[in-house]
Length: 186
Image (cartoon, rainbow, N blue to C red; front, side, top):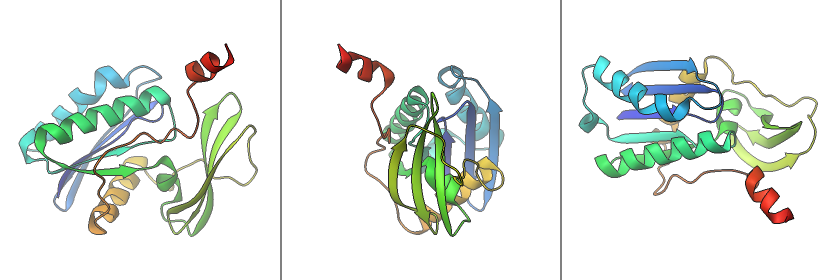
């Protein structure tokens, strides 16, 4: 498998190139608005740096959420376009799966902003239930075990080995965006 896997759901940009048995990473802090301008140059550079061309990529993977609404849209749109252009397979990864990786039973949490939290009960790395909480939850795990880029690559490899491909990369928002909520209040 030759795969580009990305995570644009937070203020970090994570790009992993899985080239057969090898994995290469580009990870950097980009803030709230850096993904759109930095994602594709990072993907292109990582591919070229390791002696490949875009045509060598047979699989794309994206973290589909929850997380930053704009970051999710950027990542899903970019990997969808790349998959269409290359005829590549698609793998969807949730932020919860990254947090739950290498943990038996965990309450995974993603900051939803404004003191809110996205939660998922996960068993053996799999999401069992999800919910939205309007307050921090004691005992919840917010951090990925180990290096985020390596964890992303490991989850993608496991999903590929299990044949967990999707036809469409769909954003996993868990709630309406702030703009949608404000529109509904009018």
